[in-house]
Image (cartoon, rainbow, N blue to C red; front, side, top):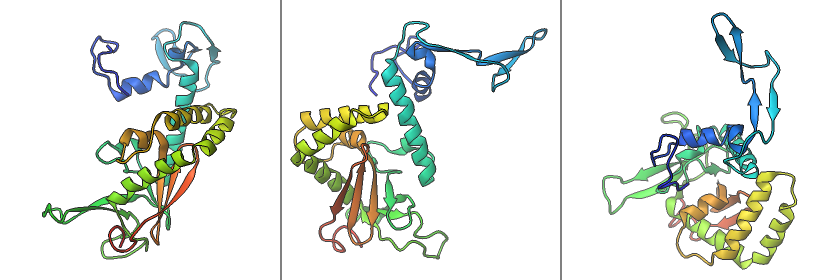
Length: 254
């Protein structure tokens, strides 16, 4: 999210994740207000506490001008719920660990045991031989003890898989545009948003030759790695695309 030059509440241009998250979870920013989030425990001491059902609350819609569009605010709630469910399902702390330099962190899943793949560096002391690979975190559950039998995968395979999947979508543009048109009739605000976003992307962007990290984050939820040189790229709209690794067992997987 680019906010360069936009002043925050104290007039500074630097924004923090916590400040933005607060805006995107507080109903006041979409123009509504929930009354009596807290209540007075003792009127004499003026002691108050969070209201967890002790007194009745009142929700007032359109009580003041909104800063954030209501539709976008609701979509954000659903997206945050999706991310919470994702991290709980796969046992990771949060998805935000993925970065521009390492976009696959927390998003590569073992197709054999369901554990997360972690990135390892081979030959880290020799730049000529240095190699980044991804390996199931369940492969060696304890030192010296072998667990999951799934094999590791070369870092470059993941980048190439996304490039090929995106170009495949372009080759089948009419099919996907039709699919997203149907999804826009969904009752789920997040599904509607993703359908509109995906259709816009596929219409405006042509074939890619190199990995585009922003495009990857906009489209991809996770990648399953199966033994035998097979990947499954799962997009945020639920689409699953299988990708077969070339030269399996030679250059990329072993």
